[in-house]
Image 1 (cartoon, rainbow, N blue to C red):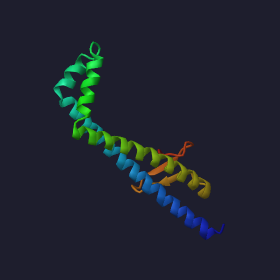
Image 2: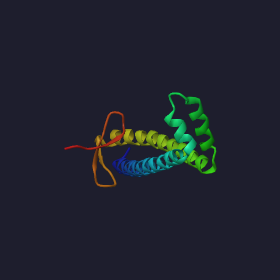
Image 3: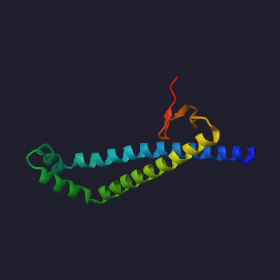
Image 4: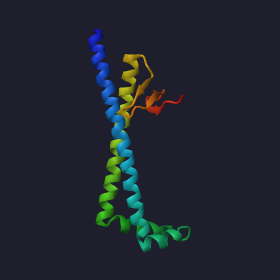
Length: 133
């Protein structure tokens, strides 16, 4: 492989790493928001709250009430979004791990500057963590 090809591949992988890292961060934040919204719906349902308080005695009632709330249209939509975000995050983590491995192999460097300007170290599990001084 020529130096030009290596440099082009390295830049391409670095770009993929940065875009996946950003998307992973965005999806993680959005997942947290969606989960909070779903928790809010559950917490605002009187039957669910009452059942949850008595969970040690009425675990079965709590489960039934939760299922009822989760069958409501707004809950179904949020549950699907949460599952979708979780799936996307899992896929992005796998792809990012692969890109990081390729980056380390091609560059011989185990750190990369994120699109936010923060220097991150690539650890053995091939994931990004913020670099500490």
